[in-house]
Image 1 (cartoon, rainbow, N blue to C red):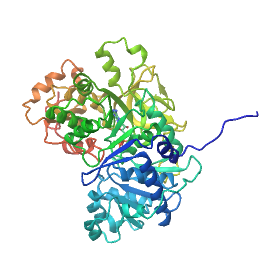
Image 2 (cartoon, rainbow, N blue to C red):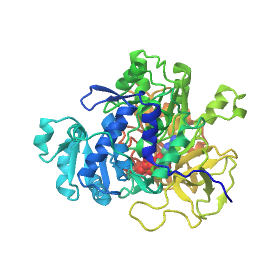
Image 3 (cartoon, rainbow, N blue to C red):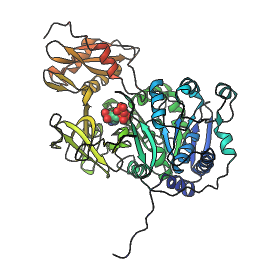
Image 4 (cartoon, rainbow, N blue to C red):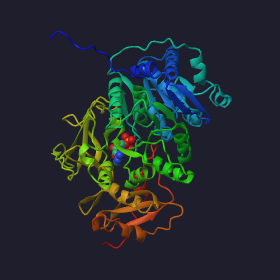
Length: 546
Ligand code: ADP
């Protein structure tokens, strides 16, 4: 057939080129590591990305070498991202909250040749330096700093490196399936595993998250990714922001509620994204400060289940629509987003909240199915009732882990997420648990997430709740609630257990409530249930069997 469309590879450099050309004067506002603010623009971000790309070339870094970053969400980090991936190198974002042994493992596993870091993480670099012999260059994301130079004599400074270059650089053109960036899973079990994204997967994912039924991003938005750039690439938002030309507000190290409320009010943030623990802090601070969060139209909650009280408070008090989303490192991360369909608009507010509380439905580009927990690949009907192992496929879903030959997929090409869920006929997903966190009581499964959400909804008395499987002499496992009370709360075990009575079947009510000062969190703010299990798994072993 004669006649065809032009082919252009989908490259990350085209996102920043677009932002520079058509949104060049749109602001990128950044809180620096020293808490000062920098106001820059997409054009300046693009120019500095080109300068740093040339600096990397001069250092002898080659295509497909890994260049690591240990940094907050700030403008230098953003420039470096575009410089590294745009220049055909791999941008390896490192989560600084990993344990030092994990950090050493992933730096060596990725064979990082360069590490870019914010001054906050200097002690971490100094501590692990002797164990990462492949790293040739350490670059501090700042102007010259005497403390850093003294602690790390070989250090280079980002501002000095880009000052030596000009912005005439032309981005190389290459195959769109080339690797662009690397994120490791937070490794709640075993060593972290790398998910290697490509230019094509990242660009398509950016389009998908910007769609109206995902996050609905546009050039009218002022977007604040609170989710760190080292947590699945801030869920892809720095790429999508360039694609749509939205203003970006990068919160730097200030992730506490008060700092975030101040940024929202000062810069009129219209959409912000983060995990539930971030939003808990923000809501407490907004109340204390008397802020109306009047510019906020949407907030995206993901990473862990969003409690109903959070959706209701954002809507009723702040007139802000919460978008509940689900995904994982292996899925770039967007798998689903909870947006209503036309047929839901006639429903009552309470019924609409039920839809919004689901993890949502997949955008074009992602397919989901449920498989039998014991039988393997037999699919389970998407009837909104039956639970199964959630499996996924799509353009931005992992095929094989970094450095591994063998596929990470089932024999028929799906990725098993490790989540247990229901799906309904429209594709709305409801996660009931991580497979490893389910509680098996007398042969019946109990969802820990459902019990946690009920506890979190108790009159705002509980700030954190984890339900774990404790060993039981008769039932094998029984649920135990580990909870953190708000400082002023007098809540008792009896009161909370009574609260469960009309919400779940009697046999699903936890056997015990243990109040603790705090719950350990992993590097991305998720509860470390494994540690809680180790600590509390025997608490029921001496109970009289009932
Ligand atoms: P890790 O698996 O190491 O925690 P990820 O950050 O990739 O690292 O987490 C992915 C997992 O987080 C999902 O498989 C799911 O269990 C959980 N998750 C993510 N978003 C949600 C959500 N909205 N509701 C419930 N669980 C979620």
